[in-house]
Image (cartoon, rainbow, N blue to C red; front, side, top):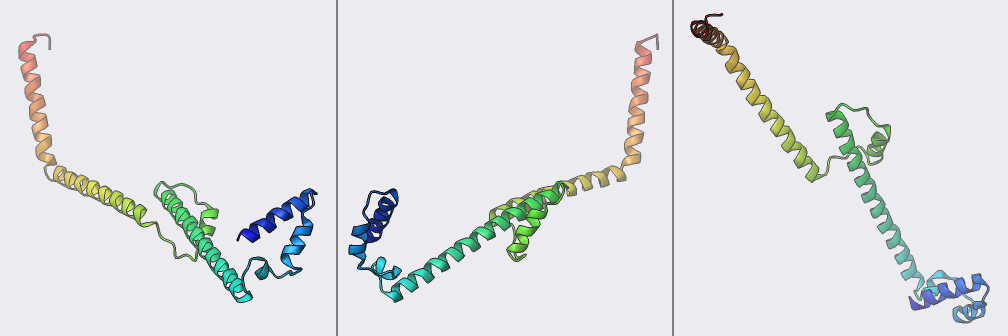
Length: 160
């Protein structure tokens, strides 16, 4: 690795016009093989290159998956709040293979929100059912109370 760094530095110095190119030729021994330049055998170098390509592909796949998850979240929020759809988000989800869901933490948050909304809906529904059942009785009590208050006010105030 030190040899590789020294070669890079001498190339930079050579590019600046300070010489240094003669040292490079002496150290390399005239080989143009990248494996030898890094102090590896050909097989080691090829294995290293394969490993680097696999790691890059894994990173790219993870990055694409994260982007698709974010796009999925934006799509979900747009649906929830009835905002216009974004073609870019749809494309990112398709690039990830349409196999994208919300991240687990966000899914838990969304599920909790939905449960709260369902609870509110069910409580409101129950209250409305109770009101509908006793609506006639409530009206009668309200009218009786109003009539009673009106009579009391009339008794206390001679103007009414």
